[in-house]
Amino acid sequence: MIIETKKNKATIVSLYLLAFASALYMFEAVQVIIMAIASLFLLFQYRSAKSFFSIKKVPFLLSFFVLLCFNLFYFNNKSIQVIANSFLLFIVPLFSSFLYESDFFIKNKQRILLTYCFSITLISIFIICFYINDIPNHHFNWYFARFNLENTIHIHGTYISLWVGIAILLVSDFLIHNKTLNTKIKTCLIIVIVLLLMSLIVINTRIILYSIIFLSALNYYFFAFKSKKMNSKVVVIMLLLISFVVLFLSQRFQDDIQFLNKNNIKNSSRYTICYCSLQTIAESNFLGMDNHLIQSKLNNCYDKYGFSDLSKDNLNAHNQYLDFFLKGGFVLFILFVFMLFIKLKTALKSKNYLYFLITLLFTFSFLTENILVRQYGIYIYMFCDILFLGSVLPNKSHCTNKIEKS
Image 1: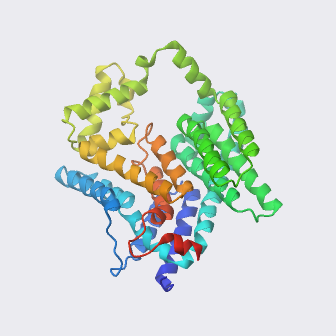
Image 2: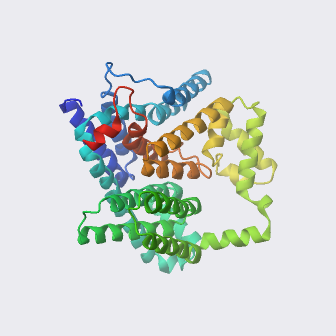
């Protein structure tokens, strides 16, 4: 165990700020500064006496290297930003393995996560209040409600839904594993989950809603059947309630059913976006291309098939896997998928079910949005990896499980 230093304690403080930065999302510059400070302090945790390299970290390192090479070779005004973002996504979280050698971090980890949940709950309360206050304008029409909400909070629904979904998983996990909590605290946590779920329904991002139901079922399997730490009847009731709410209150869910019944998927903008992304990938011979040219090629394809509205809005691939395929070819695509596989496998093997579920939520959300393109997506992905990755990819010279037991 390392001796706690001022530098180490400053890192923990920066992580508290990083958790609270979610409540400051409207101040993007402030959030960027906090992300940079937290990353810098995390890099300072490196100690050459420890063995940092391992075969499991290769996909992380190579993903950054591939994006670095592509952006240096096709250098343009956005290259520096892409390189910086990929450094935050693939390199910085690897240094979190050193955090798990710190007693101070272990003691504060749960509080840092609860700080994040508290911040997201504040946003959720605002979302719910805004929705209720805006009823005279949207008249319970989800499309109008979502449009008014996003124009007020200035953040895309998918990103804020992802933040809320992760908060639900964190609070649920805290409630499950802390049997010594008194009734008042348990009641407060249940109220927090209800508030988070209500805001998730208001925003109504389909992939996150469907994923939360599926992940709740996995929670039931992990904790009720394997760990036997939950009352199975309680879990079944919770899952039925969530399913009922999504099915009968989600306008988008009902629209999806009608959409499938009409069998007009070929007229879907999503279909066109996916098709044009795949066509652009094929045109690059699956080797990737200049990041600066990707959007113009997608726009030309949209116009070709009569979707001029898509080109006017400069819509990207809306799929993180296809986005990386466009930017780095099949090499980056394979590395990224393999990286996710390693995270899921090691989390499951080490029985870190919370991180497994969080990674799975990201894996699903990547199917419908370029999560790692915008700052809001980079923030939450980096935050989760910093707090959890070090527990499943520890340095060879120490054992995380022993530290946590101490």
